[in-house]
Length: 361
Image (cartoon, rainbow, N blue to C red; front, side, top):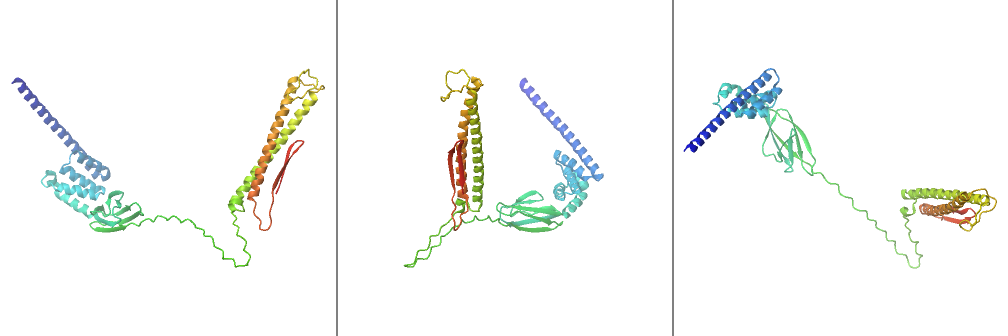
């Protein structure tokens, strides 16, 4: 028995504490609500309804009573939001027996009439069905819009969009207390048709009469293959000049390297004679007996001679290959004459100093 009585006492104490806490919270909320309403009314009387509006909105969020609802409607009307003001003023007047409404009923009714005088209605229809509709930057549905839209009495911006259709934007003047009908039909955007591929039909020549000489066969010349005066021919000629320049550089390098080889050979022949050598140099060459260079220097002269000679031969070969390529490019890109024929050729022959090449066009 004792534990059960203790439990009952504990539960009763907890319920009483919860009721007291709730009552204290309610009193605190009521005090905060009244303070917010007082601050908002102070700003409204000072002629600043805009800054006053957040105080009434906060009070309405804390306690949605007929008093806070009516006060919010009055603040919204003063701040220039008649649509929202009508909603809250109508809701407040639905509680006619509330003390705050009984006291200020006439003022709230007059404010509601004023709000409705500043509101117009807009009905929107059109096509295509399902097109998105936005009014003053706020989405209101899709075509056809099922209900009329309440708007303040001023210009309203209506935007209608749909995939595959051109967007349409209109400004509609809204008059207070009137209903407006708007129909918007979007124009479909035509996709550009892809051009059909060009088909070239070869003309069939007429039959040749019996005994008459056959006409010469028509020759089709492709400017892209032979260059001509078109862009392709110009590109081939440019490449020919570039390759020809490379051939000249390679041949020039071959000549310079050949001269260096000859110079090292001359130094070796004239300066490597008095060295105490018992063996010949690589390649079966024996130094002469009237030089003044050391054995190491003579070896350097010998190595440089052979190295330069090898590189000069490589330069001649590269230059010759580039020259042949340049000649082929010039030949390919030449304009084809109607009555004359041009000939091109490249001739190369060994000389005492290397390889000599020249071309004719």
